[in-house]
Image (cartoon, rainbow, N blue to C red; front, top):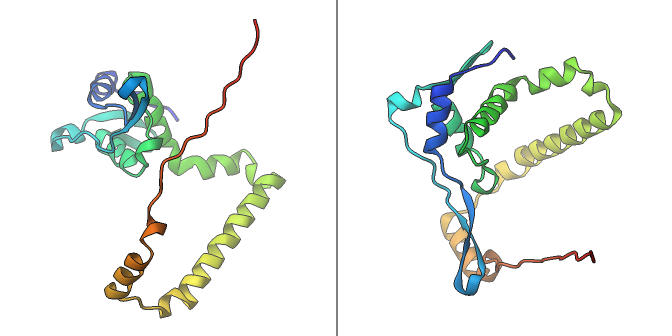
Length: 171
């Protein structure tokens, strides 16, 4: 990939991000999972800070924020270290070339990979067929949506539940 990181900007960026998910102690030491979906806001000048240069161009703070914004908060990596920033920058750089790299390595010839690709292709074809032949002809008004929601409210609520397992071994 021939990546050259800007150490100063990567270090600066690692100071700007906070964990999206953290555990806190609640009442009576009950653990509480805190989820913060917010990302830091940057000035236009800071968005242009280059984190790495590579053969395809450069990756900026704006690219990093855009990538994180597309991820659900629960799946966002903690970017509190320069190493974590570099790993995420690598993922951004590799994303457009992953298919090309897989073909170069012959992964498309692997029977399991070929089966998974065919399954996904069929899934996409069925989805598109359904969208073109059914969804395009179905019209639901705002009033109908509201009535359905109000008539079926219990189905739109979920209640948190947790399952735990403990393993104990004698010493």
